Length: 259
Image (cartoon, rainbow, N blue to C red; front, side, top):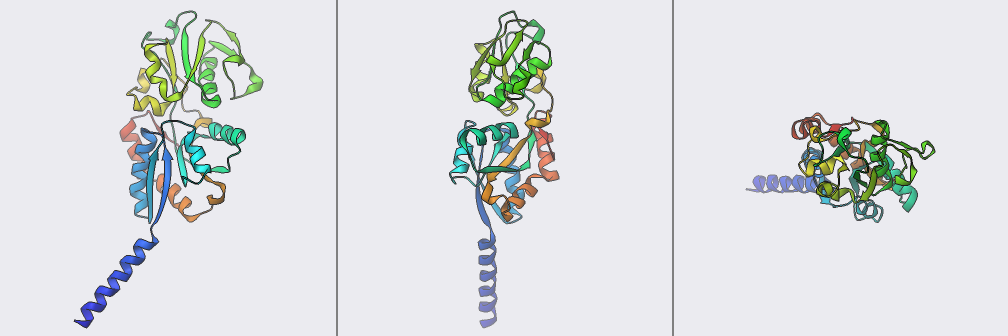
């Protein structure tokens, strides 16, 4: 009886030590693919002693504020030009620690089947944040429909259009609202994560940018945490064959892994 009691006590100690060793972190993400992929990452991280709580945010602004304020340990929803712009504008003390996936932006329309069918003076919705709005304009510039002030680089807006062959009217809207704007505009530039969430497929787009490196998404953490062991575990859990297979099978090319 004493032997059984000692064994039971020993098992309790081991189980308690195992539970104590597990670390819990909170990660912010936008609904749809980012959150879905993190659910798979969560499974893998759990086997490495890291418990992940996923919190969803419906816009691009709050997740960085929440991370900077310590309400989150990490976030996974944005590309580097957007993060860099947020840090420059808001003085956030956060940093990227690993790349995740890319969502090629597409131009979608319910009014026309081809970008060449867009009429003179067409109204086109684009994201209202500087980096994603500029990203949309660069798609049209790359195809020769407009010219942009080259000195502005990636940070261009409608005011930086220097030539507009078909007099397109670019209307800035919240990125999450752009799929719903398709009934009211001639076309809209939709970020890949919101396109997937709205049931739009890359093959539906009348114009696509392709997988441009500057817009690869990333994991961000507070600068003070960048060398923490849990950060390494998180990134390693993301960069696994299992996550890559999940992305390929689930999104069928609408989301591209970047590691």
